[in-house]
Structure formats: structure tokens, C-alpha cells
Image (cartoon, rainbow, N blue to C red):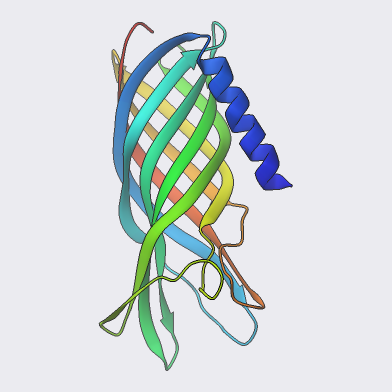
Length: 199
């Protein structure tokens, strides 16, 4: 149900964007990615990994102070973990991601906002004690490809069309296929965005 609601919100946002004054551009930045993890019989405290995101941005004005900003991104997520007495693991997951943020312009240059995101895992791998293994998805695999959640963002337009922003996203989907296991993505991101067109 949550996934359907977020998909509907994303489609509505794109419909609104197509009818409004728009700016196009691109963005890139750093991810500090981690997961929330719970499983029967395991005690794991995951740590963040440093990764990246890059992609395109469409910004459309809905009113004097409100804009909608869909993004299409390649975003790398994952985590690292020490399993006491067993192994050290670093996992990376590569997503095609669609965040759709609704932003309020608190001033001429400062924005805050939030919105849903949808993600699809393209690939992934884990490295345990120096041994690399490709991630397996779907039936018979350890992970699900689909991810969705919420995103919160604040940004400042330092120059015309040049924006520095920070965001926090947390997954609502359990991406684990394992029984009695729950894994959800969470990311703190810092981005630089360049938009072209009239504000």
C-alpha cells in the first residue's frame, strides 16, 4: 500500500511539473549510506559507507514559494558491519532512484522540503574478509530489488542556478528476502546541483 501511494504521488508530481515553469539541470554528491538491521539470532551494528549519487533534475514552480523537484539518479547505498567472531563485511548496492521533493522557499535562496522516493536495485556486491560476492535479487536471492521511502532536504542557492543541499532519506521497504530479517536503507547526502533556466 505504501509503495502504491508513493508511486501515485510521484506521477502526480511529474504531471504538475510538465505544466509549470521549469528549470533543468544535473546534480552530484556524496552519500553516507547505512541500513537499519534486525534479525533473529544475530547481533550486528552496521556502520556507514561513503559512496555517491549523480543524475538529472527537473524543477518546476507551482506557486510563488513552492516548487516540485523530481530527480532521476544513480545512487550507491550499502553498509559495513563487524560480526563478532565471524567476519567483516562491506556491502554496496547500486540503485536507479526517483526522488520527488516538494520544496518551500523560506527565503529567496533557502529551501526546505520533503517527498517520496522510489528505487530499483541494478546490482550490488559484498566483500567479506577480502572475498567479493555479487548480490542476488528476487526469488532465491537474499535481496529485493524494489525500494521506497521518504526524503527530507534543505538547500541554499549560492549563485544563480548553483545549489548546495543536504538530505536525509530513510527506507520504508524491507529489502531483505531472508526470513525473520529486516533491512532498510538510510542515507545522509550532500549535493551540488546546477540548474539552467529562469528562476
